[in-house]
Image 1 (cartoon, rainbow, N blue to C red):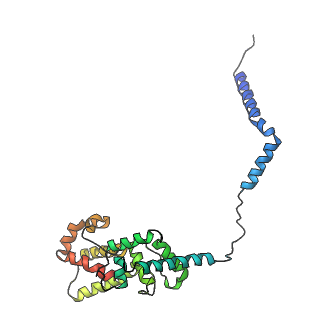
Image 2: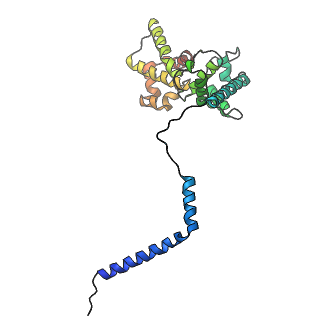
Image 3: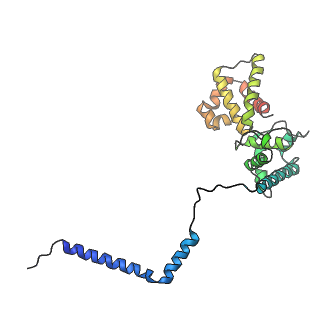
Length: 248
C-alpha cells in the first residue's frame, strides 16, 4: 500500500503556481504588445542629469514681471489715494484721520487683493527686491505692517524698504529715553509688557485694550487685568501713544 507524505500537496501547489504564471504571461507573447510597452517606457522616461550645470541665459522675464507688479501697485495707489483711509493718512492728506489704525490697513490689504489688482504684499516686496535690491533690506514679515512700509517706499516717504520690525526697536528705545528724562521710569515687569506691546504693534500696526485679552502672548502674561495692575490709568494713553510713535 502506497504512503502519501506531505510532499504530494507541496508538488500540487507548485504545479498550480506554475500554471498560473504561464497563464499570466501568455498575454506578453504578442510582439505588438511588447513593442508598445517599450515605446511607452521610452516616451515617459525621466533622466536626471547630475553632471551638467545650468547657465542663466536671460533674466528678462523675471525683471519684466517685477516691473509689471510695481507699476500695477503704483497705479493702485494713484487710483485709491483719496478713497482709502490708510492711504489718506500715508499720503498726508489734510482731511485724513490722525491715526493709522489696524482696520484701515486691513481695508487697504483687502482692496489690493480684489480684482482687477490681485496684488499680494509679499509679491510686491519681491518685485521691489528684484528691481531695487540695493535699497531693499530684509524680507517681508508677512504682516500688516509690510503694507505700510511698501506704500511709504512707493510714494517716496522712505528711501529704503525694510520690515517695520527692523526699525521699531530703535524708535522704542528713543521713546524710553525720553520717558526717563520726563521722570517716568518703568520697572522691569513694566518694561517686559512694553516690549510685548512694541512687538505686537510691529506686526499689527495698532493695538487696542481688547488685544490684551485676546492675543495669546498677552493672555499668558495675565491679560488686561495684569496690565491695568502694572500701569493703572496710564495704560490707555500708552496704547494710544505707542502706535503713533512707533509706526510714524
